[in-house]
Image (cartoon, one colour):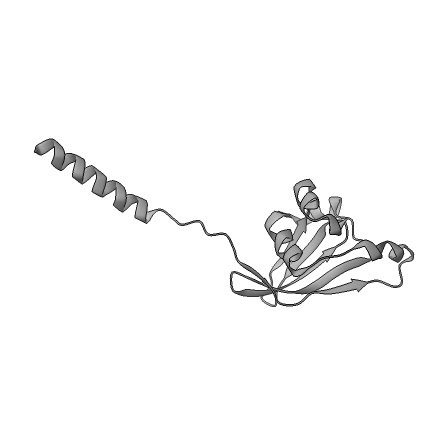
Length: 131
């Protein structure tokens, strides 16, 4: 009887501890707006006809791209004359984004958020319209 009580208490404690563990939830993404933008003053703008992103692509981008620090972004990002700009709700927070052909992006809001992203190989493989 004593051993079964100990087993019961151990199971009960295990369940209580498991219920205290943090729940990891994937962020939710809702693309609110999406519009292509081409810098007509740049001579290499002809390459922009191949850039094609959907709302689902934008959500996938932010799931797959790597957030990087400003120095890494400065060293590695290629800012091409074509991009998609718009708004996205990320876990309920409205933010603006700009995703450039080739995979560099900005994510920002009116509260001072200013993040930079690079779409590396796994991201580029998933989003062929970005290249």
